[in-house]
Length: 465
Ligand code: C2O
Ligand code: CU
Ligand code: CU
Image (cartoon, rainbow, N blue to C red; front, side, top):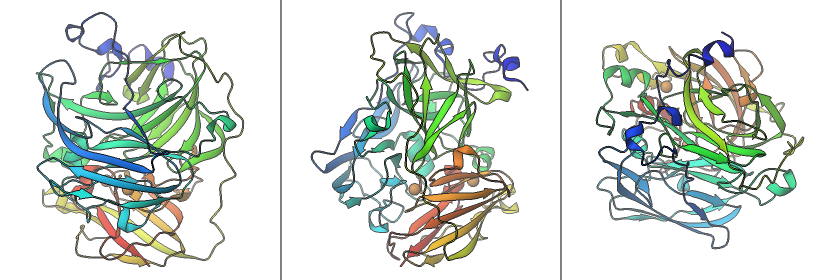
């Protein structure tokens, strides 16, 4: 289907609404749609310290009744945290009535600091990992990771974004003014009932396919417009949804220049007219808004719906007016090194059909007390990941990997850089170097990032020693 054909029918075909045009008018004080807000910013570079508290909130997303949500240091989601390489003394408190955690998704740190299911922060307690950050600049994220509770907790708001930076974005010619020409966008579909209350009531089908919402939130907001300068803008996209996979494009066919994948920069921008983003994945794109009208970021060409409206604000400085032609260093190749091969199958068995489980990895549902394998510290391994029945977004803790092939073909542009999460439509081959230790007490996880699948057992754990 050609893009033009569906554009005219896009509004009619909305399965999820997000654009300003679909915002319920009654809920707006004025005709002017609200401006998209960035999450608050915490810059840890000067202090070398980070404090976060998991807390309850009351959120009123659509102007109707409010609903209980959760967030880190606020009522829904968490602040954007700027980090740089070096030591970071961290404290994570919990004022909620249930255990939560903070897993640093995409960080190359040891298992003891990983924040996965073995490191719950109990109500009233404080978890204090001392992290040594040592990785390339990247957009990564953090979220709660309590086994069998991850889907509900992340849905309720326990997630936030991290920018690892080396302070050299100006040299790279990249926009870096937070909320002005460098926008952090957390994409989440959420389900709202007829009273406008956010609800999470997964049916049997939702447990099978993952929970999908009926409306888009960006940074926990619905129906907002992102104000941008009339120049090149950097969009840091996080798919923070439980299960929805986005195929992003602009309604006016404006190109998206991919500059970074999960683990950091590409050597040079890759122009795309469509960008796929599965749950857990991040992408940084540059978009030139010079002379733009009111472009809309949309998803799913077959059944298009709006994600976010953009509008030029001439009062914002257009600092960057041309695309850089080189961004990062050439990517280090891991091919040709001595590797061990492992096959990982993401199983949805027949039991699942009968409502009795069936979500597993290599035939075994997740067991907190079983270590599934060990990887030699410092070694490079080739993993062959196989999906059953549907495409699963596969994620590994503690590493950034490279994609060697997807169904026998070279990786798509989205998967051509460093990754920690990759959508596996059939068979995907990855290569990773395991540089950080993980003990039996605090092993690393590998799992499907459709959170309902993960909670149902499509997760395994490994040590690195
Ligand atoms: Cu984003 Cu194990 O998770
Ligand atoms: Cu992770
Ligand atoms: Cu899955």
